[in-house]
Amino acid sequence: MGRADALRGKTVERRGSAAKPPPDGSKPLPGWRRYWPMYTAVSPFFILFAVFGIFPVGFSIYLSFMSWDGIGETQSIGWENYAYLVTDSDFWQSIGNTLIIWLLSTAPMIFLALVIAYALHTAVRFKAFYRVAYFAPNITSIVAMTLVLGSIFSDSSGLFNSALRAINAGEVGWLSDPWAMKVSVAAITTWRWVGYNAIICLAGLQAISSDVFEAAKVDGANSRQTFFRITIPMLRPVILFVAVTSTIGGLQLFTEPQVLFPVDDNGNVGGPGGEATTIVLYLYQQAFIFNRFGYGAAVGWALFLLIAVFSVINWRLIGGRDEDTIGTGKRKGKSRAR
Amino acid sequence: MGHTVLLLGVLITIFPFYWMFVMASNTTGDIFAYPPKLIPGPHLWENMNKVFDGIDFWGSMGITVVAATAVTFLVLLFDSLAAFAFAKYDFPGRRVLFWIVLATFMIPMQLALVPQFVTLAWLGWVGSLKALIIPGAANAFGIFWMRQYAQGAIADELIQASRVDGAGFFRQWWTVGLPVLRPGLAFLGIFTFFHIWNDYLWPLIVMTDPGKVTLQVAVQQLNGIYTTDQSMVIAGALMSVIPLIGVFLIGSRHFIANLAAGAMKF
Image (cartoon, rainbow over all chains, first blue to last red; front, side):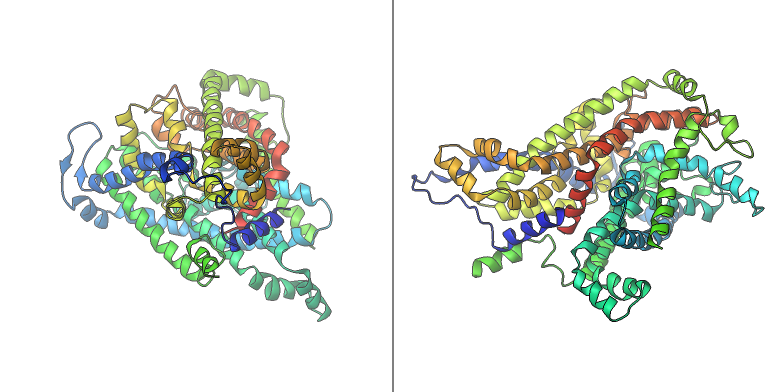
């Protein structure tokens, strides 16, 4: 049903925006009197965006050249925040941590999501149950579930280490070893998002014509061949959607590491050695624990730059698909010309 | 083979929920003993009472419910109005304005976290419910999504008929738009409600009075203060998600179908 809606949405749009106020014979009103309701209707978003979007973004440029603790006087310090940023090893560590955690979670997540989606697609029974079950982690609170998973990962006697002990495999410092810490955070993120992405991939799968699969079957392809040779290539656009959203989400990771490794009395974040400090967590620490508002604004711009770079890479990868993406301008132009 | 994969996956997915209940209903000693207790125990009530002693649970619940409900209502109102106008009417600047809506999607708002906080401080809203409600009262995702939905769902003839009857824009929105958009509104409503309920970074920053925080922040406070009593902390976590699980189980089928459809529109 959802797919049908999506298709309908698209066809209508292809035809161009159909419903301009049709000439119904009534005398045309002057511009403002005719259009004020529409402008009123769209204005709340633009007002809120101006106050809580544009203004803060502009202000953060100014702030990033200031030294300010949020209470006293602002003090102009030129490029000093940025100069410090470039040499700040904690900042670079947070970028490294973020990218490692992102890689550790995204790659297995996309693979697992595809496998689950494929299994769901071919499953006959309990489909509705599976869908709800796989989706459940995504809607429950990150804080609550991170606490639960955190105690499973607990170093001393968490469930994981107890299980490892039971099979004499030795214990792992899930919350203290630099690499294991990142694996823990990545595992929690994966657990939370894999079902969501599987549902998205499933919708993509259902959009593939069943003829393709039948043809493969006739040609004697087994299920593994079908999965790697047909399903995955045909799902490319959906996989890219999942990759894009996972990237944007992954680079902004905050709650999981913040809850897993609570801020200590000295304001340290990200656990032992700050090995799980992500960029946003670092920004939070600098601005809201240490009250370095100017420096926090500069870190914000660094984050923006990073996301912009990754977005460009992603758009590049998507390339040639702008027919179906959200840019409406071109399509309108075409339909008008027709 | 497919079934084995699915079952194994579901077990891993569901296990933390089961474990949350096991932890919340046992003592911390039992859970972290070796071998640990793996089945629910009799201490749930006791742990819950400790949560009530530790934090202002109902106060935080109240703040969270009010904020989530208010934002949901405002988002449905503002987003459906804007989406209706963008989808079904032509007015000068429509394309540019819609393009701006889409562009705002792409900006990571963490970029402006500091100045957003400063803006709220100037407005005198820090620590108040307004800080949780107003900035999120309309959003680009909802407008984009509702617009797609409205384009497919609302027949132009209905709007035309309503206009002939002398209805203005807002009347048309109310009598023609809203009834048809109801399933879409249900999805957007649940989505928004969950989002605000689970939001963490923003309330952590703007709700500066430790006695007046949202549920998520309160549960994390519990963890910060009573680190050693994990069972009690997890009982708090359990209490904070039960309302969500309830809402989800009621609306899940519809919700999931719409979410997938939304993604397919990109």
